[in-house]
Length: 153
Ligand SMILES: [Zn+2]
Image (cartoon, rainbow, N blue to C red; front, side):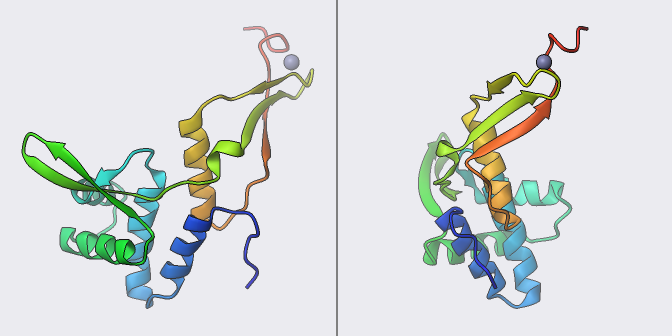
């Protein structure tokens, strides 16, 4: 199978790891990875678990812990410690390493005026989703739009 040549190395390793698993485990791993890939900040296992419930994924908290531990052992997630009033909590993240170089640009479909979007969070999330879905993004992404000048309210 053809691998994307300039996607995020970390995300490609996550996908490979998911592909190697038996189908039942694949689904759980892929659901947990998909929650982590959406985040812009490290999150705890409980937060992963809550988001899985929102996603209608039926995965126990125990499985979430197990999968996070496996991902950590494989070097796919970073585990950090977060100090709260209730004690020290482990928080997890997948590092995004390609989002920063990419340009997202609105382009007016009438006059062609362009406006670069300066939103690192949005850029990071788009890059993460693309990596998870096995899409390779170009360096510059043009988003068709209509500027105010061409579309007066
Ligand atoms: Zn315009």
